[in-house]
Image (tube, rainbow, N blue to C red; front, side, top):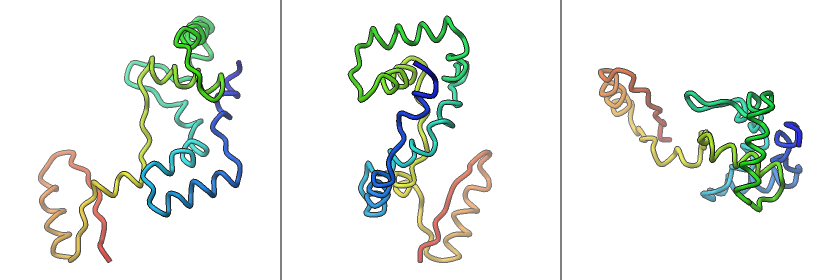
Length: 139
């Protein structure tokens, strides 16, 4: 197996991309993941948990790559492809990196219906060190 197999295992056809995008627009809760993976998988493969290794770093280390393939085989996962099984085994062994998903975020973002409310919300958080927050202007 080559790293390119893993890079390409989440690629979608135009039809599949459009279907997932339509589902996302229609507010389906689990829509959007295939769309994100299609465009962001290579970036996700470059991400790592603190003290961990990226999938590319593991691939470049022959011993680590052989161990990942062995671990994948031992897990006996029956995903849609061997590349998918290796990717998921890496996520299980090294901790998954979760992508920001706009559909989920809407549940956590407060709406501000007046400028005064927005200023008040921003003012409350300005005193907290490192308190980054997103606000949505309600129209």
